[in-house]
Length: 462
Ligand code: F0G
Image 1 (cartoon, rainbow, N blue to C red):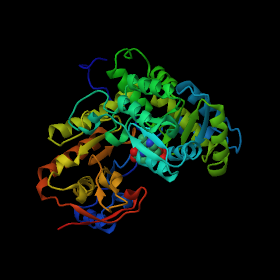
Image 2 (cartoon, rainbow, N blue to C red):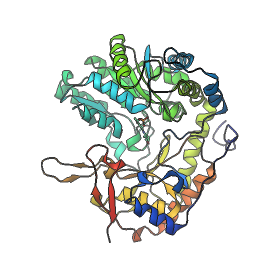
Image 3 (tube, rainbow, N blue to C red):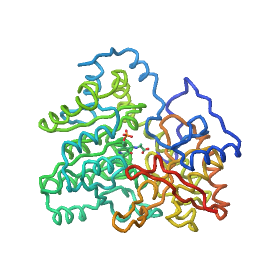
Image 4 (cartoon, rainbow, N blue to C red):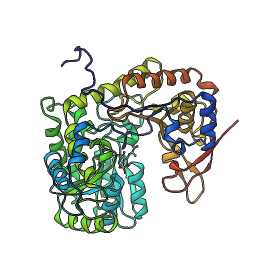
């Protein structure tokens, strides 16, 4: 199919539906007030269209459900463990793996094993749980994305890249002994779901090898990233997503993976490595904190659903549909002049709240404000990826240091909503944009130190 061909419909049909309810506006206002203006605290049943996350919210296929019923449950050595191992080896190509209950469990095991106090862990951009798991183990997370990542209007094919020159300077400055591993997050969620090029992964890998530092990929959205490579990077147009994935992972020593995204399941994850020594260490810790190493905190049926989902996510027809749906939402927003991060990411469209609400300063949480207003306006739940999520309090001065970007993310659950749902979201957001001058900011009245945004409380500023 070329660009002029008719827009392909979903490569599936619907077998089961779930009712959703839109409460009246007054009730939505009351509900959000009751939870102190934090959408994480809303009941899911009070949300009309839930774009809080693409994690654990996919609709599974009939083949995945069938596999869940067919498999047997076993504490040790279940057949689904071997199905998942086969899929992992076939698609990722690592020598060893451990299933875990979700991505952050893989992060916990990885960092508890590999890092030490005061060490540095560079990444293009750490996701919030990755950052928190490093801090919890007394390491220092470092973000080395290119400057382009922070310019929401700039259209570039691979805005998720690591700045390779900065990485090498950083290693030289801090010395390789203080850097136990380097990570690369694909796609780069925190700056707009932006992809990383194969070229960049290779460059990072060459630098890491030069200094003897292992590279781990945060592979949450690897297939969406590989599809971008296929579309945008020279030499990949005729390769399958699986072939691209195999090449990409061949430049790494291991990966963390959240199956809640691209295994198209509602729970699950993996920690993979090529090192037997590391695998032994990971395995021992997994048994203590997750469960025996052939189930890793999951029911065997969930392993089976992941094994089957991994093949569905590397199916090109699925990726074409996925990317066109994200682009569809982006286009309607763009047509309504709503400031979005360009180009749109692989799993979400991000709104630049600094541009949407230029009259609201960072201390008044523009992205959080927009998220709250969108719920009131439409019953749609989005996620804040701004100063509530990534802002810091300087320990010495007590001063608030805002995040570099104030984004509101409209994450699209996989195979869950139709284009009509997304059209409604875009139309409501466009209406809100027209009356943006009337929107007032928020004051934060409570936030715990680590991952504070989940339970933070706010009040409106009048
Ligand atoms: N890394 C990235 C890039 C992520 O986006 C996430 C989760 C994780 C790690 C952790 O995985 O949730 O399975 O423990 N992201 C979700 C989100 C929560 O909404 O973006 P997990």
